[in-house]
Length: 94
Image (cartoon, rainbow, N blue to C red):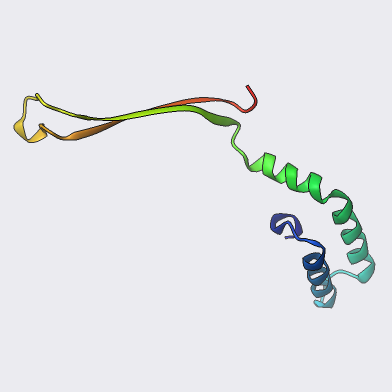
């Protein structure tokens, strides 16, 4: 919960206080350890979560156009728009 919300120190303190007051929650010593760990490693944990949730491939280029059919076998298909999309994907950082 702390990491997914990327809690600042005030939010962290309120969250841990609520956890210590819950029945079956954490002790105040555990809350202090969690708070110290979060203060020291918040940036690293946040960056790690972002990297894990990002796709490996990135969109490098995209082209698109809309064509209208002017000659077809069946009259009802004339002037029917057709979208053509070309996407170029690549590995992140390459």
